[in-house]
Length: 68
Image (cartoon, rainbow, N blue to C red; front, side):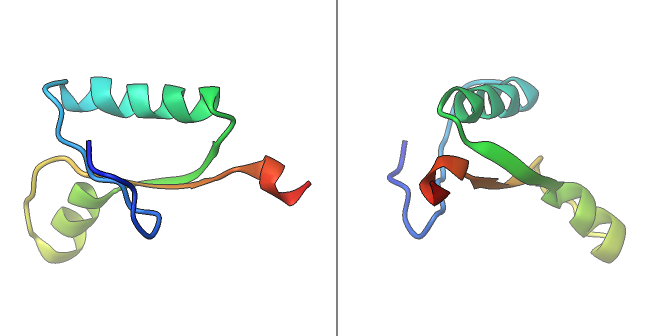
């Protein structure tokens, strides 16, 4: 795993894509983070520009407790 930098985390894994995405959501939830948005970048690029890439998700998350 690569270290998070400027709020970005990249990681290679042998897991299947959907299994990995579910694991990330679960880990965020256990750590009390909330997913605000989740965008399928591959679908956006395909529908808007006709570009095909491997499955790719963008998550926007926040930690509500930081505001207390």
